[in-house]
Length: 309
Length: 309
Image (cartoon, rainbow over all chains, first blue to last red; front, side, top):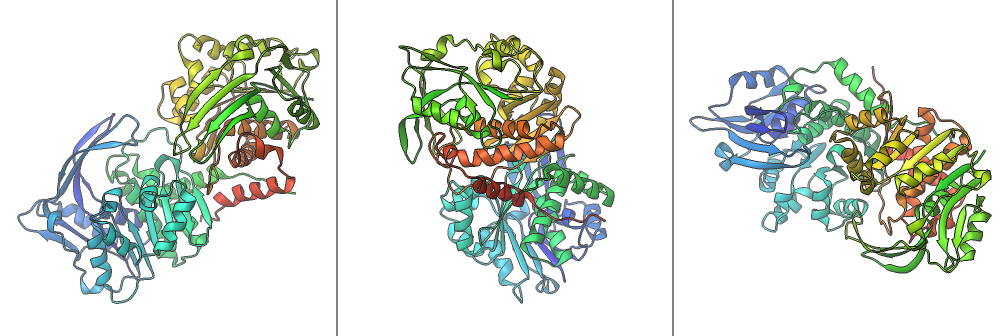
């Protein structure tokens, strides 16, 4: 039993209308595995960093049950660096710098012990790399979830993306990406087209507007986002959502629609913490009580008693 | 006991990416009172039409328990006419024609029997007219709900708008309008500022993203919108939402936060019907079974069982 996550581990520089930070640990695999660690300890991480990456953070990962044998450390090289600036609405951002560094020739090699992972989260990297990870699995994992983005839906990447989508169980994308991928404006119709591509479940992330879960038999569930007084830094919220969801699913071992719904509330709760501080800082300090109280807020938010005659 | 609605009764011409209609009955008071009529019969309508307005529609109103003594019919004049074209996303539209006609000098005079109404819905007309309606009430109604729009938030109308907002119980606006009215991007902060302006409740309508209810003690409720395979014509959905909500509240006589939540689900269900056909057509043919089934869909959409230890 293990949960394998593949993605980036990086440095970010982030500027919001309120504050800025010049260098903070980021990357999709960072957010995914930190969020999942609150629910599931037996984790494996596949990524790549440079010699500049802080040893303390790697030890922090390990202390949370995240095995780092698959985290390649490239001597004499620099970690992936991303810099972005958020607009006043905190929903859109400009990328200022993307220094691929070690990511330029990232080869996601799975240590032998990882090739039997039952739960696999393929973070947003090139679809060819996502396929390469699945190629190395000894058995079909119990659950594979994939995150991707509009960039990989361009014609030169699309065939590889479609191939990996045909091999997974859960696809997570935002509403714009769902529309781009399927050519359907209606998200209900988009969900039907995604089901035809292979995945059993589609999760459409709508940021401050919540998330929709569709299964391949037209069942639908809506999870709200918690209205927050202040969004401090949205970086990593989508990956945190995915990590919380996957950690919950791996811990419960239940892949039913009912349990997917619960997992999405767990993921939403973790994402609502993520945005409260810069980078993954808030994810490093949560308690079980914090999480239970936040879950209760999500339950209360949509709770209504209606008796139909 | 009565429910008074004030707004427009008009003709619309509507063009969507799928179809068009050159002349169909519309107007905020039309949608409000038709939606409310499924829950509450003792209605009163204050509006104005021209001699061109079909007598059959007036009889249809009356057959649904909507008193039309307050519906002024101006001999030799034409009804208000609005023409609009929806964009491909169905969320935005261009206004092509606005012929005010009888609306240009609309004077909302309340028949004597209306001045004791307990429930009052002030549809989106000039704030000065909304104030004039309240001036005519013999007693403070049990509940006054007001709808308005960004146009009335311009400097020349704002003082009158602020004055009417200070006299009401429930304000319904969309998210952009809430931000414009308060200068706060965070909807949580915007809600606090609206509470300081007077209303006990604020409802923020987010269209396909649902609706938020805030009370003046920081309680919050989120009602989703039903993901639909096809939105045929969104015209009137916001007024239908308000009408369904007010009809439900008037019928139940319960203004607690818990009952406001129920009312918002009823309003959302009615709005989800409205968009299925051109204009108010769908609102003319619903059965109790249709409504009960739709309410169940809304309940199911957010239903999740989580046991917190």
